[in-house]
Amino acid sequence: MISIRSLALSCVVVLGFFAACRDDSPNPGGTPDASVPEMCTDAGATQCGDTCVNTDSDPAHCGGCDQACTTIEACEAGVCVAVCRIDGEQFAAGAVNAMNACEQCVPATSATTWTPLADGTACGTGQVCSAGACSSKCFIDGTIYSEGTPNPANECEVCAPATSTTTWSPRASVPLLVGGDDIAAQGWTTYAQAPNTLTYGEDYVRLATSTNSGGRTSGQLLIARANSVDGTQPFKLRVTMQVESVNTHNQLDSGAAILGSFTSPAGNGTDRSQMIYLDSAAIGWADDTQSSAFAATDGAYHVYELAVDAAKVATVSVDGVAKLTRNNFMTNGTIALGDQTNDPNVDGAVRIKSVEKLCQ
Image (cartoon, rainbow, N blue to C red; front, side, top):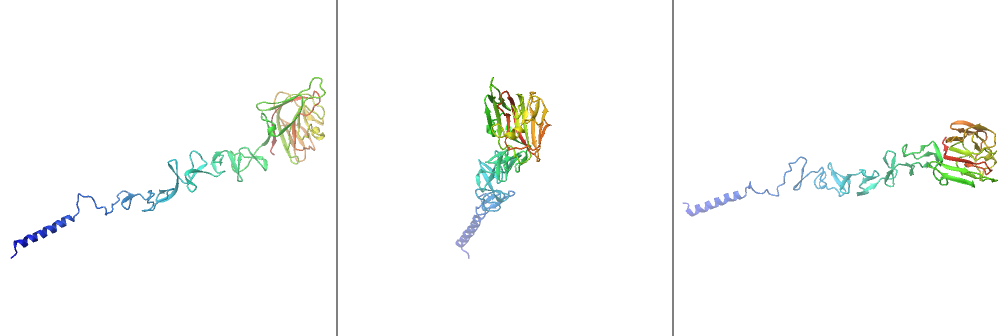
């Protein structure tokens, strides 16, 4: 027969077993066990360790857990890409600085500052980069040229960015004198004898001579420019000029003259024979072989052109109308304008607005 003591002990063992079973059961109201992984429920989220991340954009887990980008990279679509971080902003590689079209994000060069683009890089219509700035220049054969710079190999071509920034552009003429600007700075030399005056207006240079009362000589004022034309090639000169006043010329001398060839100080025999004189009512060759009626002192500017062709035939036109012709025209390449003589009372006053060599 089972004793009361044995029965009591059995009950204690059973109660202990049930208590133990109760302690091992999960507690619905308690804290989850940290060793159990947390499940990521957000769309696009990936469980990396105990953290939910977006591997499309997380630089520490780019494209997969623990695949970290470098400090100069960002995570885009699950791929580490190089970027620049400048002044607190992030820029993609190749992005151009909105404040300077000649600066770009180049992480391989600098991830924290803008990198200047190479000289000659196009940065806008008719513009290229030069020394880190966008400007109207040309980049031709590896060299930067300012707008208006002539081709060193062909003066009838010029840098014209509005036409092309990468090739030379043709131009209609080569300026030899621009009125209003210092003529010495433009390559002109003055040959003078008193009394004379050389003055400047807004768009012209004025040459004037006179004769002192009873003087046996008069003023001379001639301006000349060497290497203006190539005497071995056809050429055309255009002079825009106003003859204010002039005395009648003497043979081989003139108070208002255009010389297509000049030897200092007043021209040699050939220069003076083929010199163009301008009288108040006529234009002609200074050796008096030919002349044409023309009101030179009418108060207006006129366009005088001297054209010499391959056969050395010279034609002189005024405002597009042919006035004179001459065979065997010779030039040493130097041209001159103004009062060529110091003969008394053979004087003149002219205003020269421009001198150009026309491109053929």
